[in-house]
Image (cartoon, rainbow, N blue to C red; front, side):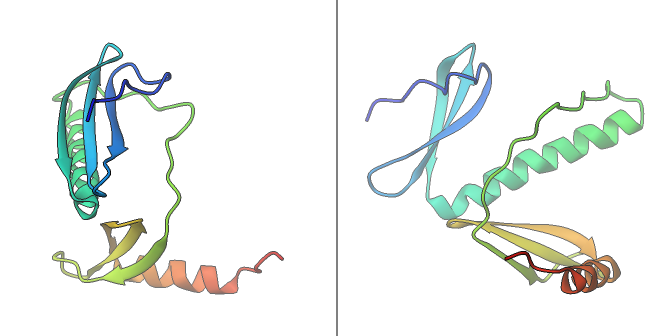
Length: 130
């Protein structure tokens, strides 16, 4: 299967293609050309997302310490549609993972249990539009 070119708006970054067997091909683009790829089961997409977000967290941490320049804020934000939301265990004491499911991939975000309870109470008090 031939590696597709990146989307028109992407110069450098990561994009995906679903293969005929249901696996995902993660493709790295540099200067609007594919330069490398790895193919994984769709359920592993959460690990790729967690690695990227973990790297962003480390970069933020190092910028806060003055070790690297701070990143710029974006004008618009990337988004995905989620297919599920739940809670899961967390290795950090006093925290729980807010688990977000996107298709076959799941990513857990650690939140203090108290904050999750406040958020749940706030959500329960909101009116649901028709």
